[in-house]
Image (cartoon, rainbow, N blue to C red; front, side, top):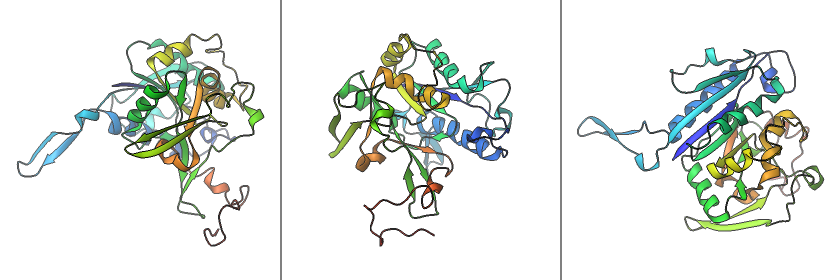
Length: 296
């Protein structure tokens, strides 16, 4: 399998609601470093097992190894790439002069320019970290069973040692009218199957956003041929959310694992920006008994 990732990376400490605008660069450096390393460590071919008796490093994991390509798109020189503690050759830097809010669309262009040689074309915001070496086997299983009209998004989560929950899935359902202009979630609303003997259920996503997308070559080719491809729209929430979500939502039936099955396909959002809202802006739902949680 050949996997191509385009990462949208921007940093300018001018202040604002996005993490890429905050004064301290260290969390952004750490997140992007973890992100790029994880892509190579999870999916790349440089794997071995220690043969203790022979005192040798021998091949291991080759059955699941993939070729990994990473493209990091930046704009106007506002980035942290020189500060990443990474060896050379782990990514290709694509420098642009795009407006910062439209940088995600430069990633779309980079993916389209490389059409024809990769099995999956993947878009990532620069604070998302994969941990599942079976991630693309699950994607391929879903694609085989649902076809190219269906697209599976991971559940984005944060982890924290504070508060009542250790793992918080941050992209819960939106009101239906928020995405009704772009998708009809009543069409093929539920997909069910079994994986390793376990039943699993997927639903059309009323909130299709995850800060990323993962398309087969055929899907990427179809997406790149839509009249709205690279239109740089900001119509869904804002420009960053639109780059990650609007185009694919208009093109495919977007599914996510249903809430009970959220860990089936997931991706970590670095930090605790959403998880820290629990107990203040976000209340604990009545589904949890008072004995189940305590907020300190």
